Image (tube, rainbow, N blue to C red):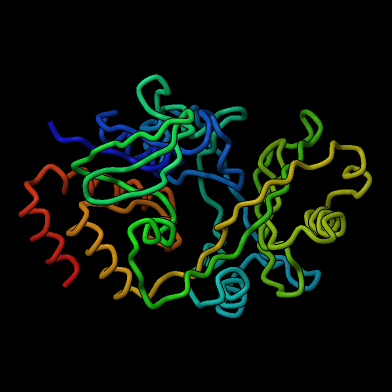
Amino acid sequence: MQRTIILGAGLSGSIMYAVLNGKALVLEKNPYQHQGHQAVLHFRNPLLGQLLDLPLQSIQVVKAIYYKGQHYTESNLFFNNMYSLKITSVLTDRSIGTLESGERWFMKDNVTINHIIAPDVNHYQCCMVALNNYGIMCQQGGKDITYPYDVLISTLPLPFLLQKLNMQIDWDFTAVPIFIARLTLPEEFSTVCQTLYYPDLDYSVYRATIDHQKVIMETLSKDNLDSQLQGMFTSFGLPLGLLMKIPNPIITEQAFGKIKPLPNDMCKAVLYELTTKYNIYSLGRFALWKNLRAEDIYQDALKIKKMIQYPISVQRYLLHKEVT
């Protein structure tokens, strides 16, 4: 029987686990029910929520741009490029480029993404210390344990994985940490879902969302946080007196918040070597070192499931065709 291991129990790992119908072993360094994702998470397709057994609610999202004290309900190249440079240092198409209102699905409060991964048959607080094409060496509960595998699906940050394999590539992995402030509005105060984008390079906040009773502010710096929060409230037309009355925000840091994508040819070459040499498949934005939506990850997970059902020789042939 093929031994399949998934590294990571976050969103990507949970999607892969569900796509494989639980027929894989999950290794995760954090404790069970760790709240890893604190930024805004809206699904474009409710089927993904059903796959993950998440209680979702339908919402109508209204989006706009706030720049130099003005609101804009239509985007353009100027805003897209400035916003892209602000958060990734390169020009890419960003969500700010499309401001049309649309239906989305969001998770209810107090729901963790990785609840679908059963803790009694998988391993949490399991820290990988070494890796080769024979197995994964981990420290778990004060013990050294080796997990052999036939197929390894990694959701770990690509530079971390390459380091464990002693693989060197001529590229600086650039990532910018982000800080997420979450506030709770008074009960019954809000029934809306609104998002503002902030392309201004002089303002650390790049996106903020009112998600019913939650306000989620995403920023590149936690310096002058009070000033950032006041500016964000003002941009939404909320009274500053309200900010003074609600509990202090919960601040979390995401180390690999915004990443500078690898050149496409280099990325394909690295991923091809990982799969053909070590039978490692990469899934998710950190593992591929590119910005992805949850729906993109789901489609990639379906491809991986199909691929690993073939014999190794067929897998390598199909991979070679895809890369070339």
